[in-house]
Image (cartoon, rainbow, N blue to C red; front, side, top):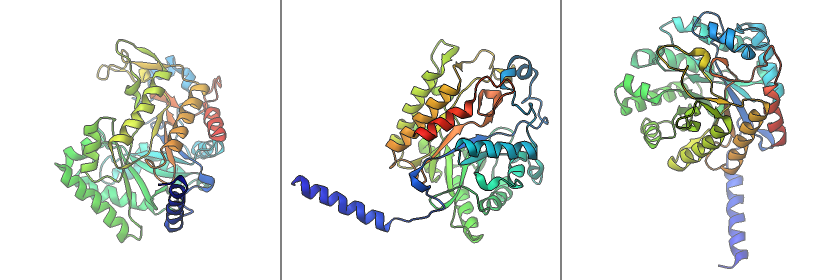
Length: 364
């Protein structure tokens, strides 16, 4: 076929799709910009001693936020919303915990979400939920009714993040769901009940994302359970090097990029990539986790943040057919200070990590 006819065919098909595609200004960012979010972990209430450990305070003082170790207050959350927005972030994805019937409503780990919802600055930053259904906060059939009712209340808020025109909710552990519900089929039914309840409450449905590893088995499990989209929380182990403890952060950045490629290649589902900014959980070492001898990354800085965010943006730009039309990316994390992945400014002020995010977003 002559080249000019091929070109005309491509242009005509492109025009057809562009005129028939859904145009939702609330979902699709203006000027085709990336919507970059960060996971927010509110373990900084002072209620859980395993978070603000003596090792963290004494040996990792450079991680101490400028407000102090306890940051769970309305004033500080307000300031963080403004800070994240000014740096170019589009949303927070709050780690959400179910700690028992009724109890979850006053769970300290959910404090930041409550402060966000009562903040006068919340219109500057969207939000979504990342349901942390891991050990200590498992969710099964007995918890599902209460949990999904609470999620739907959050979905109805005007500044809740949407994917495919529907509120996005991320679930941390697919294996945990399968274990608690008894089978992939039962999980699939539970997810559908969430979508049905959302529709009954006047919503267009729900886009349900699964955190997966790069392994095919993890991806297939999520697909069998009926998830709509794939993502992750972090992929720190992808950059580990056998026999090494101190590992250059560049190792992880290269390995993680390949991880994104693998997930996009294996699954037909859309994928929201996550840039793991750092991993160094030594402050949380105990006899059970062995973090004192586990691998960790070195070289975390404004420059490394810039490189991580730039790589994430480049990947989304090159893989637009593999990602949601809303052009969403995630960062691990806003304030995982205990695990070494944080963007909050420290009291020492020796490195402005957020400046790395801002620079990458402006340049890209």
